[in-house]
Image 1: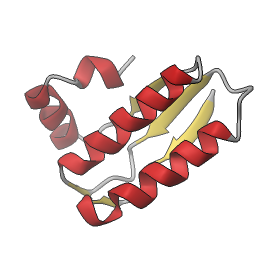
Image 2: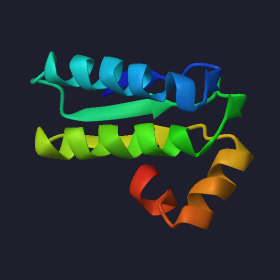
Image 3: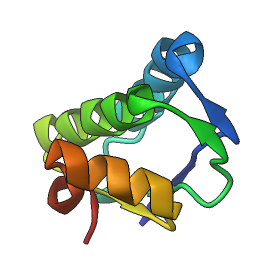
Image 4: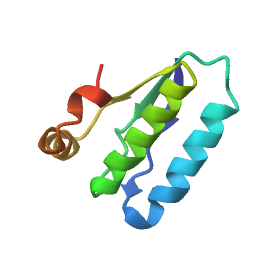
Length: 91
């Protein structure tokens, strides 16, 4: 398991940089088999946070790796449920 830590703030203005940083880390670790994004620090976010996580999931799958998010704040879980993507991000 290889960990990725979400920042405390992940709004649209930070989304591309966060996604690019994670994707670069994933590509630089081809021997990793399972990525876990820790969302426990996340306190301010919008739907862009979900877009970042889904992009990382797609990247992991393209690399033959798995991806999941742990410790989602309740509001992020609600947002993921609303968009129908909670099952894609959780174990």
